[in-house]
Amino acid sequence: MSDVLLQAENVGIRFGGLQALEALNLTVRDKELCCIIGPNGAGKSTFLNVLTGTLRPTSGSVRFLGHDIAGLPLHRIARLGIARKFQIPSVFPSLSVEDNLKVARWGVPSPVRPVGDLLELVALGNRAATLAGELAHGQKQWLEIGMALAIEPKLLLLDEPTAGMTPQETLATAEMLLRLKGEFSIVAVEHDIRFVRALNCETLVLHQGRRLRSGPFHDIETDEMVRDVYLGRR
Amino acid sequence: MIARDRNWLLVFAVCVGLTIVYPFIADGYQLTVIRDALIFGLFAASLDFFWGRTGILCFGHAAFFGIGGYIMALVTLNDAIPFASLLGMMGAVTGAAFVAAIIGYFLFFGGIRGSYFTIVTLAMGVICQQAAVSWSSVTGGDSGLIGIPPIEFDVGGTHLDLSQDLPSYIFVSAIVAVVVLALWSISRGRWGTVLTAIQDNEVRAAALGHNAPLRLLVTFVLSAAIAGLAGALYVCMAGLVAPDLSGLLLSTEVIVWVAVGGRGTLLGPVLGAIFIQRAQQTISSFNPSLWPLLLGCVFVVIVFVLPDGILSIYARLKALLKGRRRAS
Image (cartoon, rainbow over all chains, first blue to last red):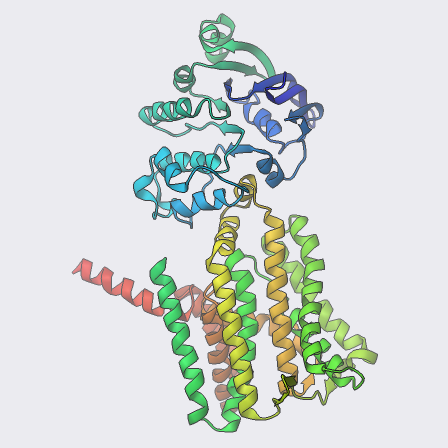
């Protein structure tokens, strides 16, 4: 299984008396797209933090290309090829859109894709000189995706990429990701079912820190148990 | 961006022009006054290079100035050391950088930022001053060391003696101009842009592959090295070194110079240092107790009315006029 990029095995994490995650497994293969969904407080963001190495799991392991990444400094993880988009749009407000991408670009040794292409890709070609702090919310989200792409990752982790977006923007974001699929692996944590439906990929459903279901999205969508959890019946 | 660079270079050229013209209209005493003010200007620029770009305030920057000064004094007062001026300056720069590297390493890699950093560096300044007072066998204690010789160099067979007013003025001006220009070109390029990014959001910058603590550390060390250079120059011009040079008062004053001149402009702090010291001399000769009061008031007014310093007056006026025109 040489094409396995990221492997989380039996991951558990405990904050004091709270078992936030328990016995989670996830395997991301090269150029694969997958989603992690679940209701509020299911542990999605915590799981993502473990996958990016920012949180050290209390049990189990996370290996990226064979390296154990738990507890590595953030910039080392980025250099290994893991890019991350935060839940709150985290751009550099006092730099221009172009400089935001350049700062991201300077973090990698030998970039291939020109900054101009990135600008077009995230639909900000005409806003290059605008200060990132002055962008609309959805544009900030896209800029941050652009910054994550600028480091030319092997794996892109997205934490609620469409939070606060209009339905049109959400679908546009899904289209953007589908276009990028095949260049690298993508793991998206999402709340918005429309977005996940548009991506229509392998999906892991979390509930109270555990795996509830996993499989292709159309199987998940029709699953009674998942519906119950989402509708708050359990 | 481009227009801002052009404006900066324009102001820089005007300042260099004034510095060149000044010896023709001033007498020897006035030259030494400006020369010493320029040294403090260099010190202010060194603080601004760190504070202006990282947004982290060092409240003990005089420690590096003092360390530079004491090392220079000890080297040049020792007759056994050849090329004392040159070695002294190198030692001053290295010594200040070394102390900054050790302290900075633990602070930056330990995740100390913001006001915690300010408080620790404040303590560092106090410790340095106390060490200078207590370690009297080396530092001369409270009274410091006197009789430090002026800088002299042998460059390619010609002897450069800076004991006279004009040569020392030219030497100091040249160093200040070169260093400020160098710091400016560093801070406007890639290095400065990444520092701004780190200031905006350090976690994000790290998640993009930038080693933020290392970058902050290198900037801090460079800033301290230049403060050390300024300290070395100062003690040679003044002929003495005393514990005050690494004290809290000087650390506070340099912050005021940078704030008044305009944080992040590098040139503004130099002008702020010259301007405030001239004002201090004039007002103190009139009534010595008036100065601290006035300085405090000026600082408060600047922080409230012109948070970007005196260099921003022009931009502020322009924005104000524009707004008025639009309103009418």
